Structure formats: C-alpha cells, structure tokens
Image (tube, rainbow, N blue to C red; front, top):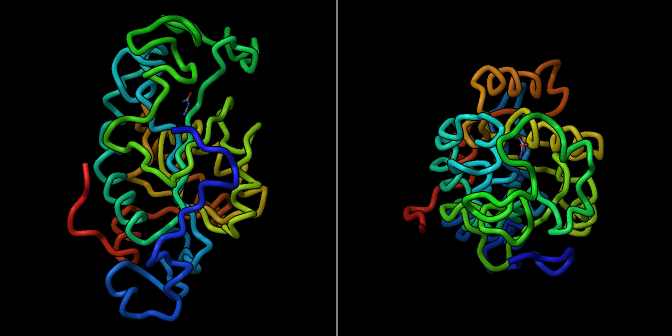
Length: 260
Ligand code: C5J
C-alpha cells in the first residue's frame, strides 16, 4: 500500500487526540494528558495528538540476506534484534491511535530519481536496479523494497517512499506532519547512523522534537550504534532524545496481545 499525502490520517475512537477528556479510555489505551518519557538528556514530552511514530526503512532489502544491505558487505543479522521491540511499540502506538508513518528508501524503475553518484558509490556485489533475489535491488514495487512481514503497514498508516537517506528529502513528509499538527516524532528503524540519523537531523532543523528508541534502531556496526545514539542526546540533546522502548511503553501502555 502506498499512500499519498493528506488522505491517510488515522482517526479512530480512542485516538490520543480524541481522549483528552476521557480518563476511562486513557486507562485502556494510553496517555491522554501531556505525558513524559524518561529519556536522555531529560524527559521527552508526548503532547496529546502531536505525536507520530516513524519506522524508517524496515525493508527486506536492508534486513534480509541477499538484499541491498548484504550486497554492501554487511552482516544483516545485526538488524534482526530491532524487530521484536519495534513490533511491541507499533502495536502500542496503534492501540493509542498515534499517527504511524513507514518509510521506504528506493528508486523508480527507470532510475530517473537515482543520482549517478549514489548509483556508482562503493563496491557492492549488486548495484541499485540490478536483479537480486527479491527483485531489482531497492526499486519501488519490488518484493525486496517492501517492508518486512513482521512490521507490515495496515490500512490507514502512511507509507512514504523516499529517494534519499533522509525522510524529508524530496518527500511530502513535512507537509503531512504540519497538516496533522505533529510536533514530536518517535523515531525507529534502520540504519541508526545513516537513514535514522539523517532523518533526525532533518527533523531537528525543521523544528520537530525527536525521541529515538535505542533498541528499535539498528546498525550493521555495533560501534556506530553506540556512538550514533550518543551523538543524538549529547550536548543537552543537540539532535534529540534517546530512550529504550520500555520507557515509552511504560507511558503508552502495552497491548496484551501483539498481532502477527
Ligand atoms: C542505508 C538506510 N543504510 N536506510 N540506508 O543505506 O539507512
């Protein structure tokens, strides 16, 4: 499912924005008041109706053997640990009516949106657009380009295709968020030091506040994971905040049953 800006906002009974005066609903489904998550370098605020969950590039091409990530020489197994906690966060966000946005890095079939510099970068065993085990590498519409089954989007969630590392570059993300009144982004996905970092930096410059969930972002390189997270919350939160999924689930509430 690919969505266009403006027509994908979830409005469900019990959504955070709709529950400000309903403590009973809050007890069942999550926060109604301006809630805070224990984070580094300090508490992160979740104002009702102003929060979106971003899942960055949880695509087969990055997570499965044979995809783009592996063609670059990476151990894709390093990313597997992200999936279970992210499933829990996704389920909790759905239950709480939080706006959910999945991104996918990739390119048009004719490669017209692929800069030559990106195409020729590095020495991968397969380049973007080449046929691979899951279809053409990082090409929209191919099996490998889509999101892993465990985190598959459901109706009403936004799926945002992006040609770059950052989710704001050449996409409608800023317009979508502003139209929905979103100011706070809970950021998850892969990889920590590439698309997650680029997106957080882009978001920060546009005035959004980002909470990065340390166990819901992953890198092929453990040292980049550690330093990448440290860079975000250093200097009083120069790019944003960092917490683990447990801290968010403590305030968002965890549904008893996780689908899928
Ligand atoms: C990379 C990404 N690592 N989604 N893309 O090339 O982080």
